[in-house]
Image 1: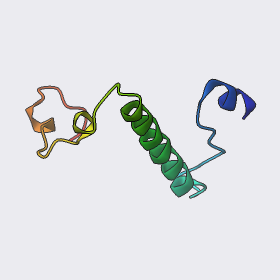
Image 2 (image 1 turned 45 degrees about the vertical axis):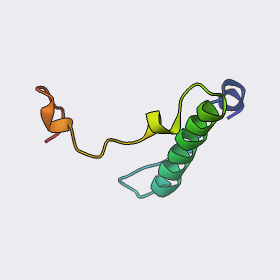
Image 3 (image 1 turned 90 degrees about the vertical axis):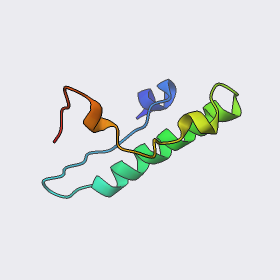
Length: 69
């Protein structure tokens, strides 16, 4: 845990989808960290909110080699 803190990483305790342990907590922690990082970049002027906006249409079907169907 100290290594994660010192390196600016997110510490996630044990989780298991099979056993249903900490799945929601893990997802929430990751989403919050991604959001915080994005907002930090916006405040620092490195990106704009418009650059972070999700595409309004699904472009994944345009890719020739998709991983998921």
